[in-house]
Image: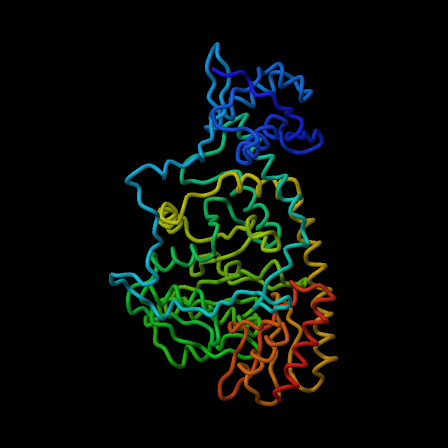
Length: 490
């Protein structure tokens, strides 16, 4: 056995005592990096823990903890009465005889598989500096560090107590806190038993399609409605039929004129903010729709995903609150103004339906109990209300600014109303033009208008454009580029 390596550990290990990481983990990270850079080589015998502790000016127990962690990760071997040997687990044995070079899969599969045209969607990579979306917030408003501290706190308590649930029931604490939050903000009187948190909206829609839809069932949706729900329900076998939308929202009279009792299985609707036009369903039509649901024996799936972005004080009652859930299944979102990793969606429905729906969580992935604990703490400590006020203030300011810029640059060329809810404007051009040409001209100038934002047929030329993700400077430049592109093709 050779002598220990004669190397100054301070030359490649720098300890930040004000940092968030434990000191022994800082040493671990930098030790591994030193091995990868060959500052320490496979087979090197390390000095004793006392010597390294003296060099780094840390307690010997810190070095011992470091060695234990490195051994668990495979970067050292500790031999009693001999010492600690460096071991690089990344050294490959691929040079051994008989091992072939790895080959990538072929670009085209040599076997048959199912393809679905209906699942195609127009998504674009965004290399451009300026871009629109169909409605997204600015995730920079709430600092990431603010959110991470809740998650870190949950992790620390987990190490000490190990009291988080490990069953499909989910985190009861979060469900209690979320029901409290919804009761306070949306006027519900709801216990956790009627609430199922699910991370993704797509998962909720997929679960509902499995529980409610049989092949051939008629499902009514608003004209020019969400692509994602339509895609999922169509895949489940539903026959989607559109209902006209006017300034009062979905035309309920149209349903009564064109369908008979028993023909309709479900109606899918966003009552606060129709996608893409941002129109809200009037109170009169809410009552009318609920009465028709009873008379015709159909289910209403109310998607209230934009509730947190509604700026009107009197938001109006949801269908769920009016009906109490006997005919209405309610889909909602929590914390959409937070970083996507901290957002949550939820389903409110009769208890037996939720119990059946919960079974599908094993397919989509078990709940993230740590995240739910962190979000529960965020509600319990009141920070979520502070974050929401900050986000709504910024959104309201940007909404007014966006409307002003549209009026300044386009004047009588377009028609729009400032939306009461949501994060996008519905903009109709007064004179016909090719939106695909507009999209192409804009992209040449460094502005991306995704195809999902374009709406054009014989009677309609419109854009759904998000404003909330743009700060003032970017917003001014974006609208200027849009105007230049418009002038170029008109």
